[in-house]
Image 1 (spheres, rainbow, N blue to C red):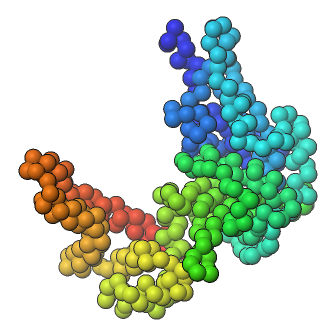
Image 2 (image 1 turned 60 degrees about the vertical axis):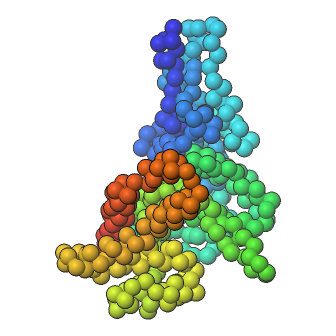
Image 3 (image 1 turned 60 degrees about the horizontal axis):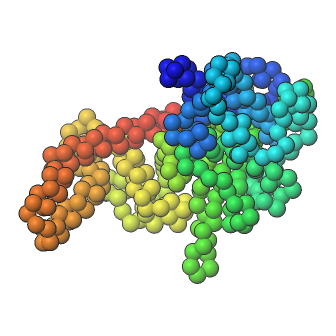
Length: 387
């Protein structure tokens, strides 16, 4: 019985099928489908739905206004074979996060697609730019808009947009849009359909304005979204991330952007880089680019690597020791804690703690951390060389 019931378990990260639909033919095109990275917030830590074979949870959005189509399909349900076993209520779980007004009928959804020409970007236009798409063989035009919740229609649109957070940020929660400290930035791609210019939602960023005593605010990015196709057009694979717990791809993008910006600062010149990390770098990065000390240090190390001949043993050693000195911070803290423990712990307790702080192991971890950082820096420099 247990073996037979196991056949009715489905991986919800595969079962949930997402689309951003521009054309009716996209509905049947598997290449436009993408899947969540996470589904545990709805389906539990195992990310499994029980009671179905061939489960497919279709959650499709029109590319501009994000009008939604929601359908659940499966090839078999457990109640078809076992009367006493109930399947999970997958439809009910999805309804918990998607706002009312979605379609359950494909024809109704296609009718909404036909109205996409009426959709115009929310908020005020901040910037327009072009990116060359190699596959399409043309330049794609993007617009960045800033918007707040007072904009007519934006609250309803945002309710649909923020559902993506649940699928791609591990600890996501919905934003309280009644808090006027939130700012929203949207990226739209212009595209042509039957001779008309339409707008597709491709990027979304939330910024919270924290209060700073006595009379200032400090903006902080909370979440950042780029749809997969547009991320690739921009030369990266970024999808969705939270800057509270940034993904590897987000860190790569941030490093690349900050390095490009700091290259324009006199304090990051080749001559200054050879003199080591300085307060001048910290001050100029903060005052001119709003970059904090931690990120300024990372930029310095990337640019220092760029200026270092790693085939020269002495120069390579100098760079390695400087980076390791920073990475050694947590281990140095452990040593300070050990000194304190020697004064207050019994010998057997002290021995236990010392075994957990094995010096050889620390050196191995430090070397691994250095090699990981070096690989990250080299990827940034490779991309910088291609830009």
